Image (cartoon, rainbow, N blue to C red; front, side, top):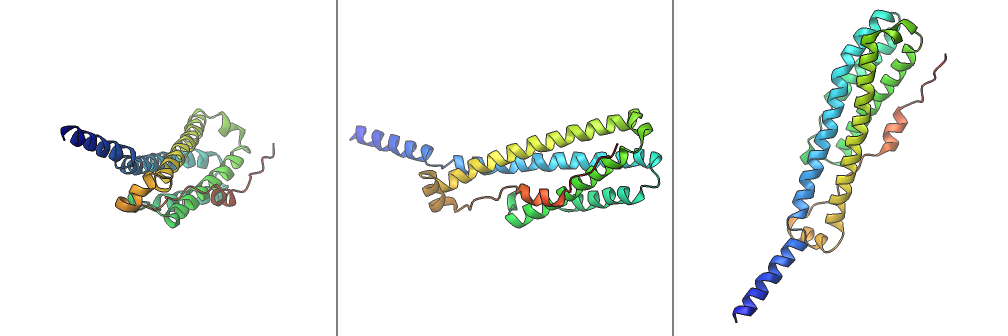
Length: 194
């Protein structure tokens, strides 16, 4: 009798540990953490932009339209707030579009900078440009990690046996991914004329 109880307990513990009891909530927490890291890198970029605009303004005062587009795109990008715990396809699309518009405006700004050799030689500008380039790389890494965490979570909620636990206990839907096509639509390839 004691052996049957121990065997039953062992089977229950094995089932619970292998069926997503803990892995689904853990994966959901990881998705939220990774999205917060993506937002953090976009925030870092937004914080650098006023300094970059200030330096460029000193050299390119008559390029007001481009500078204004960067300022406006930054304002729009920072006004879109997404709660990682309530992430859905619509909010992710809105967030991606705002960030894509900012990326596009920054690309146009860098093309304007090509016209000003003195600016490119300015140490402050070079430092800011290096920071911005580093931030863009960090954004890419953070988005890649977020995409991977979404894949893991979506696999847990859709692939048996953990999907059975999800359908009984959690009832999570698949989470939306970043759609690069939305960002690409917003970014016209800048022309560089040297």
